[in-house]
Length: 441
Figure 1 (cartoon, rainbow, N blue to C red):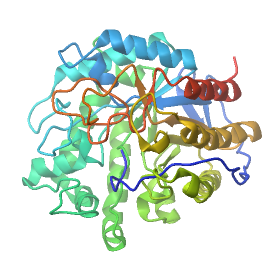
Figure 2 (cartoon, rainbow, N blue to C red; figure 1 turned 180 degrees about the horizontal axis):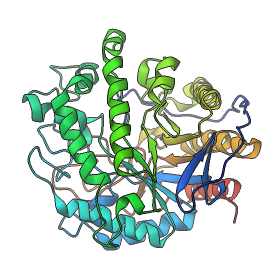
Figure 3 (cartoon, one colour; figure 1 turned 90 degrees about the horizontal axis):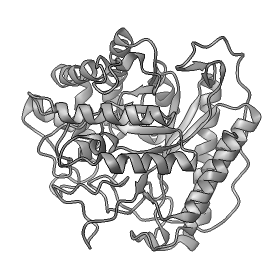
C-alpha cells in the first residue's frame, strides 16, 4: 500500500487553497457498457463516468468458499457500500506467498502452484458486484510486502529477499532492493504468468470471460510501484521501470482490448517529487492516479493534530493541485485512488472520534467536486479503506497469521488505523453528501 516509515500525523481545521481547474478536450463516441477514456474524461455509454469509490483489497478473500472466506459478510459489506453510494471498488487480484513476515496467506500463488479457491473467490466477488451495478479496479501485484508482491517474485527467482522493517535492513533498503524486479527477466516472467492467467480468466460463477465483463473498469499493473527511493537507485532503475510498464501494457492489451489500464502509482511521491517520471510512467496508461498519505509521509503528527494540521493541509492541497495540473497537461483523467487518515489521537478502536479524518476527506472530496463542476480531469476517488463490520481480533490490534477478520488495514498495519467501520456514522454522512455532488440520482 504505502511507505511504512510510521511517522504519525493528524489534522484540525483550516481552509484549503483554491484549486485551479482546467477544461478537457472534446469527446468522441464511446463503446457501450465499458468504461472508456475520452481525453481527460472517463465515460460510460457516452456519458461522463464520475464515481465515489473505496478500497476493498480483501474482496477475493471474503468471496472464497473456504475457511478463510465469508461470503455472507461480503454480501453485507457490498450492501453497506452500495447504500452509501459507493460504486467503484479497488481490489487485490494477486498475493504471492513467500517468506515476508507480513505477507498474507494464503495467496493467489506460490512459485510453482496456484490457489484456484482464491481465484474463484474473486469470481464470486465480481459476480456480487455486478448485481449491485459496481465497477472494479483489479490490482495485479504489489510493491509492498503485505501481499508478497515484487520482493516475493525476486525471492522466487534468486532465493534472496529483504524484509520490510527488518532492523538489519532499515529504510529505504526494502524499496531500493525491490527496484531490482524491473531488470529481472525471470521475476517479470513469473509476474506475467499471473497476468496472463488473471486477464485471460473466465469467471466460474458467471461463465463470462473477464475480458468481456463490464463490471471491470481497469486492470492495474501494481499497487504503488516505485522505481526505488534513493535518487541514485531511481536513476538506475528508470529505463527498466519504463520498459516493464510498456511490456505489461502490451501483454494485457493483447488479451483484453475492452478495459482500461492504470499503473497504481502514488503520484510524484513515488519518484522523489520528479514530475517527469510521473508523466513518462503514465504514457501507456489510460488514466493517472495519485495517493495521498499525510501521516505516512510526515506531513502531520498524529499526536499533535492541532499543531500540525495547517501545514499538513497546505501540503495536501498543493499535492492535489500538482496532479490536477499534470493530468490536464497530459489530457488524461485523474483518480485519487488511495487517501487515508487516522482516527483522532491516532487510536484504532471504532469508539474513537474522527474529527480530523472528516476534515481530510473534505479536502479530497472538495477537489473532486470542483473538478466535476468545472469539467476538469478528476473522475473520482477511492478512500482507503472499508473496514465494515470487522473488528480487531486482538487487544494489541495486530493481525496474526490465521486471522480472518479482514479490514481495510492490511496485515502489516495496526488493525483499525485507517479503515472506516460500519459504525462510523459521521464519516458515512460525509461520503453520502459527496456522492450527491458527484453522481446525483
